[in-house]
Length: 349
Image 1 (tube, rainbow, N blue to C red):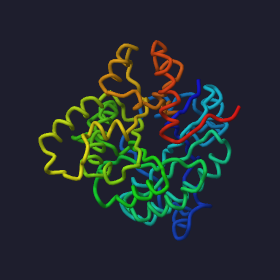
Image 2: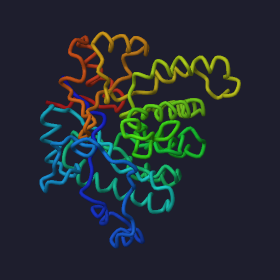
Image 3: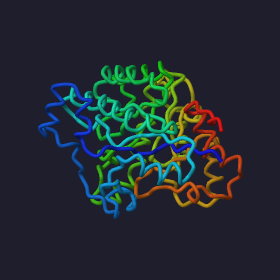
Image 4: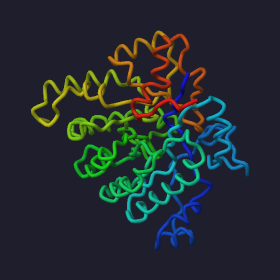
């Protein structure tokens, strides 16, 4: 069966890898160590410090900067047809010095194009942006969109941005102009309604709530209506919460739509037509529970398979999706839904 992996995290060995791609004065800033990267507000408790314990570069480091390691452990092991690169590096996390964060986004995009996309035609690329400067983000989308392997724009979910706000419209205009998918992925800054909690396990359990908030913001503030051909995918945010959100939003819309006259469809209809979800992290559901959940969603086109390589909660395609599911449904999850989303065709054998 053909296989699209919608969430694969490539990286670099260190921030200095971006120096050749940076413009001044930011190149000099990085060279002299003026910026030390995004701060991490917690410790990973998994043996691999957030990654699978067996993920090691040739030099023994744990970052996924070695194409050969990824090819061996992921692409070739599972005979992947396509792998969508989504990164670890989200410049939107920088809350000031927008010139620096926009320059870092551009440098990282150039680095990925040379060191990842150019090495394997199975890679699908994502454009990293600084969403806090929407005009600069739109220019970066325009700059990178012509690359034949680029298919989407990454919108990182942080702790103070809801993307339905009108200020972010230039990003959606640029993505729609180039027929790119909008992908939302959490970051180390993503929180629940009361923050991160007191333990990493609390924070990790809360992550879907940040995705729910973004979906609510995007639909009720008119982004789905305003950009009718734009498609969205939620990455690494779960999906079993979707039926509840559909029912809740439809109920609120029926009784309160006078407040949002620009929303012309039921929220659930918008979701079925335009929103997709990566499967990882797939809860431990039985085959019957998968079928029940998909029935409650009202569509078998929502789910796109992902491994979330190289994270510690990696989903092996051989076991994470029950083999008791009907063959045609498995084919949709593993291949057809992703191919339709990204406009991909089966490679010529």
